[in-house]
Figure 1 (cartoon, helix red, strand yellow):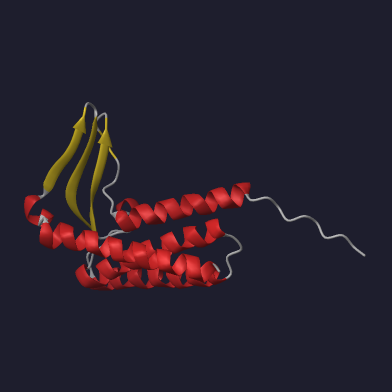
Figure 2 (cartoon, rainbow, N blue to C red):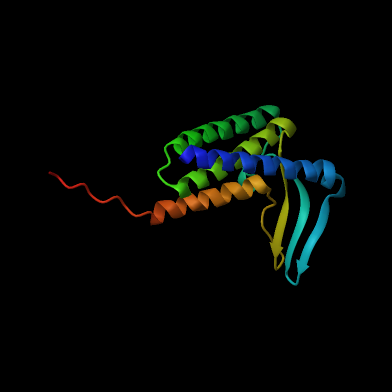
Length: 165
């Protein structure tokens, strides 16, 4: 059951992520524009801002060499394989959905690293002059999946102790 739930979700997230990045790069041509303002509601804002992330989350472990990008891709692919194994053994729907989201997002970012040497980030949310890191659909799926896994781990009812006969 868990693979039938998590794999289609991972594939859907991967497809949506890659389609959004294609549109950003080839449709909108954000790389040439640099930034497009979408929403300005008082102190809140949402923009499309072109960023090539050569690191991992929040730009950590940034590097420009091809070997650096290959190493990050290999690590992310290994993590995705570990998560796929976990998905095959998932005990409930929430875990399967969360793992599917993380796997789809991780694979989407690995594809970017292998194609471009960096991850395409473009969603720029900000409030009261403070900008969150620029992210993409894959990043959002990963964060939501991890949050769901934490919630599941914290609030899942524990198994009832087995009675001895």
